[in-house]
Figure (cartoon, rainbow, N blue to C red):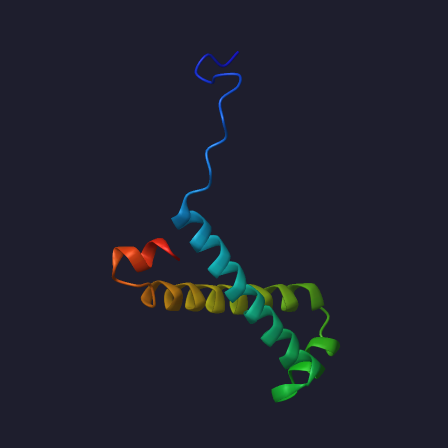
Length: 94
């Protein structure tokens, strides 16, 4: 039995910073995955043929998705952080 929690305690809203990081990272990851899918679909640099002829399709797609998702997710988040407003009044509207 957990003695520290109140039975009818209201849920705490998600921190503004946590929500900011999750939303912007997710957008960047989706952009990275779309770009990786476009590289495979349009066979840029013969990547589509390499993916379709490999014996390890799952591993190749996982490595590509992980690398593009991580790179673009972090890049989008870093850009969003750098473009945050300096003024407190402007920051509260974000």
